[in-house]
Image (cartoon, rainbow, N blue to C red; front, side, top):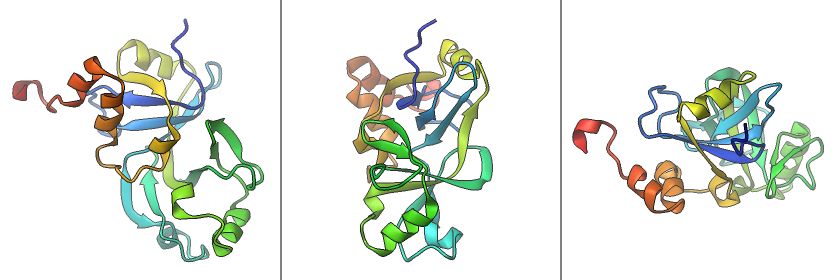
Length: 185
């Protein structure tokens, strides 16, 4: 079964998804494996925290932290576009990287080489066990699309879900404009 799933794709939640963790979300697949499960990060759920609010040793940096998903909410992850200078980064796609040497991140922030629009921090992540994501795709919970690096660091976070669907074309543009409940359509 080929569902066009792979590391670096985005998952766009269907408009009537019931799970409140994923309602109107855009999830970047940071790692996809049919045999071992998958990891992703919700790209459009900002929190009220800056990274400096959560990590006192982090240098002064105006970078908002996002809700990455309901799994391991006591962890911090990051996606960035500086994999060429941050050791231990994992390539995702199209100039996007996940993780890397955290001390190097702090050093690059101190040196003003890393800017807030180069990195996004997440509390927790979204995770699927073997076969779970494929089953959710079959149930039409998600729309799969290619990741555009501009989505990863967009300042239009609150309307990202609608924006991504609108960019997919006419059928999806209609979905993007649907009300949250059927009775309002």
